[in-house]
Amino acid sequence: MFWCGERIPDEVEIEGKKIQLHEITWKLINKPKLTEEDREHIDHCIVALRKKAKSCENYLERTDMTLDQAKEVFDRTAGLLRAIMDLKDLEELSGPERMKKYQEEAEKCKLKDAKSWMNFIAELEE
Image (cartoon, rainbow, N blue to C red; front, side, top):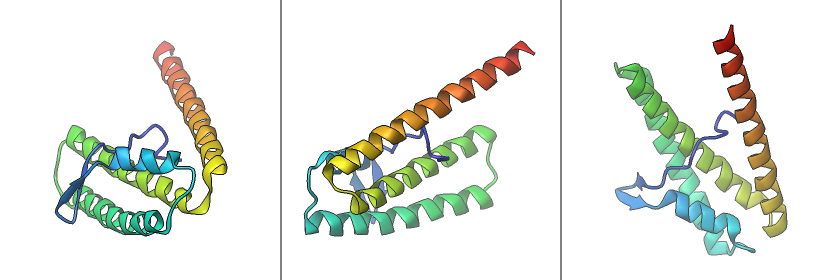
């Protein structure tokens, strides 16, 4: 759940093409039934996003950068990994099950975020 609270990037370049990753993922999540073409598209995206995320991880490991720059790369990588997880889940679940799972995930993220804020406030008060 490390990606909890991470946002899927609006746009990402894959194989030289810019795609609207957030929009595509959202449309697929809300689609009542996936076609075979959708599933093939999902598989292709997962493979391409894994390569992109691995590239970001390697860049993070091997490049000297400031803490802010590293956080930006890390957050982008986490967003890509979240997209991968969401797309993988799409393949496994059908319409109503899929929406229920995403609602549960959203609740877990809200709870995790709330706990983080509570810990942060407690640290400030000490």
